[in-house]
Image 1: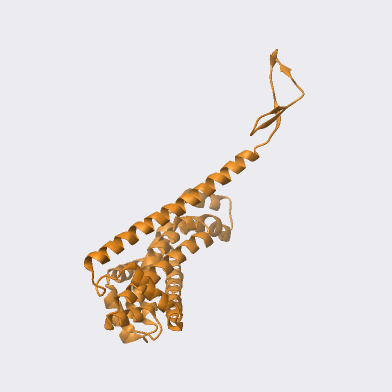
Image 2: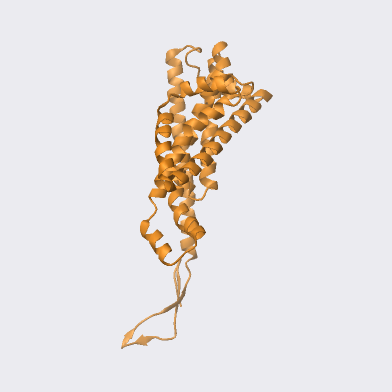
Length: 289
């Protein structure tokens, strides 16, 4: 037996082969390798966290410097003043109700646009006439300014549903287009082979079509995660439902409370990032987000 500090080699009973000494290894202890990999992953996590902290501190310093240069609370509050205002908001019940209702509207808008976009995209890939009809409609919706959609929705719906409607109109074309592109990107050779071997239609969809479409849907979801928050909050500013982050941002403008405006904006950014990171962990293949 040959023993090193990090490697143990056990020679077999055959000592010579073809006139030359050879050692065959029955078992090699590679535990040190697994430990090394774990340590490397741990170091990467530490480096990533350290990098995030340093970048955050850098931009906080830039923010503080800009606040000191402007020297006007109304125009540029400091990080300390913003976090102090955020602490006051977090201690109130209205803050959590506003965050909860806005989050609900974002999720509802994403779900509706996702379901309709996937269904319409799948049907359009099968029915050429439907694709010809939906194409100009989706192009028109994508080109329509968000404010025009919000103002029109104020005429049609109640103030609480206007943000959901604006989110759906903004995200629906993205899900539709990406779903249609994903279906068209399916390998035709695999489909022909499935036809030759008489594979069931359900298995073709599950094992060929869906894996091809999923990356396109994840890409659409990554884009819509940001757009949904922007459209919902913008619609809430104009429609002013009772409990909403957009209405509270509008109220800070009325009272000239700039630190509270920065606090609400920071809250939206943090929640959006948390949702994105959570989806990366939950969804299969979420790393493409």
